[in-house]
Length: 175
Figure 1 (cartoon, helix red, strand yellow):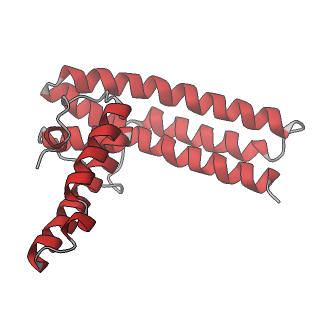
Figure 2: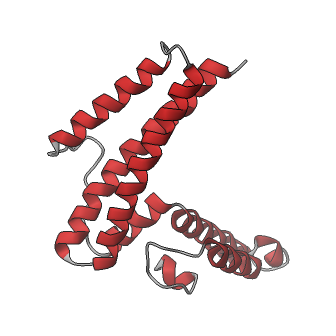
């Protein structure tokens, strides 16, 4: 089952989330297990399975990184696992710099400003990388798909850094 076909939307990194949500709700209404309460056990089981598949498809397509990965996998791009090392040493060095920047926030004389600066830096870099990946996905050729895969992996690093920022913020300002 192709998730884009399921929701009757174009295969694209850019998805209208409202349209996706509307299609999701419509589909879920047609297969909701409650509609099959008086049906046979097999029909009930199929309704639950179909509902779960629709939910999985929706969760995948509404998340930009999962959507990008899904598109690339559908195109036959082999996604390296998390432990696969990066060849881009400048990116790895940048990740270390960003982690140091986050560590330094705790010791800043103005923690609020340091945290805001860190969030801005991460947001800007993530936006630039997302735009590049979006362009590569839309080009849809072997080289651009591989580059998009590499940038998707990089964006997952940024996602982890943003989780660290949230934890840092909670530890600094939480009760």
